[in-house]
Amino acid sequence: MRPLPPTAALALVVLGGVASAAQGAANAELGDRVGSPVLGAVVNNAGGTLLVLVGLLVLPSMRTGLAVLRRSRLPWWCYLGGLGGAAIIVIGTYVVPVLGVAVFTIAQVAGGSLGGLAVDRAGLAPVGRLALTPPRVAGALLGTAAVGLAQLGQPLGELAVGLVLLAVVGGLAVAVQSALNGRVAAAGTAAASTAMNFAVSTPAVLAVAALAGAFTVARPDWPPAWYLYTGGLLGVGIVASLLVGVRALGVLRTGLALVAGQLGGGLLLDLLLPGGPGLRWPVLAGAVLTLVASVVAGRQRRPAARTASASAVGWSVPVVRSTPEDPAGRQRRGSAYADRPAPPAG
Image (tube, rainbow, N blue to C red; front, side, top):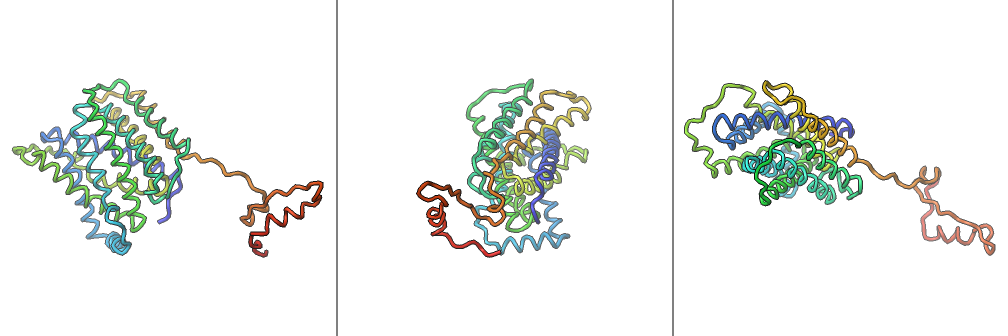
């Protein structure tokens, strides 16, 4: 599949961010009702894994993608992207109650922006190596500042430096996850990459939940509201949108567009849910500025203009000036091309 145009990819990733906001709200409420926040993450990943298994049964294209992926002989570490998703789920579960949503979100976005710059510079994503240009750095800084603006008025928890750094690491993990999943999708298919993501992340989340004692909750009260169990479905859509975005935009711009969608989705939930806080202007401004940051990070310097004849054949024509000793510039014109092959005829 060819990469989408940048504008279409940005729009798709923003929609993925909206889905991420809805997923976070559903998982948080589910965890609160059953008495264990980690159980919300378990249901989320288990639901996504179930959908992937159904896809393997009914979609021959998904099985074909896995076969193609098996023949690609990618290094084993390329399949570990799902660990990044598991990491941020677990980190958020334990860090948010201490730091508060505002500090955690800012730290996570800062880590994701730093990780996006580093991963793109290393060429880990399928889009190839992207230079560390001033527009990209400016986009990363603007995105972090925009998220900080969106968190104005939010309650702050205990400012523990260690936990802030842990949230930054979570953002870095998500950047690496996006790059590795994109690499797997480029070698196989997007469906195969999504399957591998959940195949890796779900066991990791289950192991952490077991260590945290989540499965020892006595008779958890599972609520009947169906929408609280849609985290897995939303998760599959989020992973798919990130795969499309990373291939077309790189990790940094994809991460910023995702955050813009998360802020916008959170604002919609505030407006639509009963008892919500309503319109919050800092969140709206933060969402718009984060989207602007994603656009700014994609600006590139224009290459130096070339003459029409040079651009037509792909050759660089040296400028030859006359001198009193060589009025026609013949000597230096000859030396300029002496070590070059002749341009193709016609």
